[in-house]
Length: 252
Image 1 (cartoon, rainbow, N blue to C red):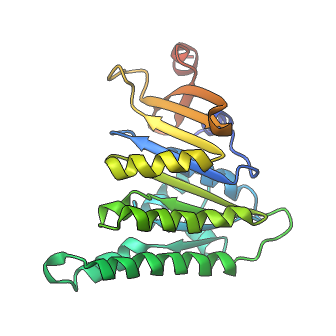
Image 2 (cartoon, helix red, strand yellow):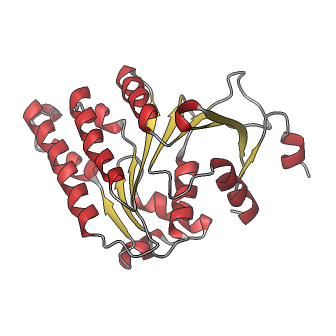
């Protein structure tokens, strides 16, 4: 991954520590993982920062490999205490194997969401915030809670609890999610209202293009500021540019 491509993407995203709540959404076949990984790189550039990473979409190995290409060592950061990893889907899968016919009861689902919330709170409180540092709580991917059958109201309560961290000094929250069904749309509409920055990753509306992989829409100030970029996923980098500027950034 070239530094030029990474730096330009981060400049386009324009996320800073004062942005307490960052929401990333992916639509259809678009993959927002590159946005999340680059923002993690930016967070880890400050050695005083800590990350509580709730992994529900990809494996530790996947995130580690992506991080290595971007220039940071995720497992090394776990070892030195800069990153704490919570993998609820591993525990959920183990529990699923114990259930008759592979189905959860509502009671079991309620216990799972409570246990996840408790684990996050415990870990966030364990981190000691240094002067000049922030604690970032990252969830990827929130929509998987719906996928395993947790009800809309329970997920709303979970997100409300997580959002309380943003009321504390030097605590930040980043949520990544896929937008698919009605519940995803409902929760995303609510989150967009409280997010300091909303990053939307979507495919081109006009279909396939050899020059453009998808569209990045970055909204700030509750919709008061919006920037639209096209991006191209190359083998070793992501290139971002304004619509109509692909010739300047892909073929020079």
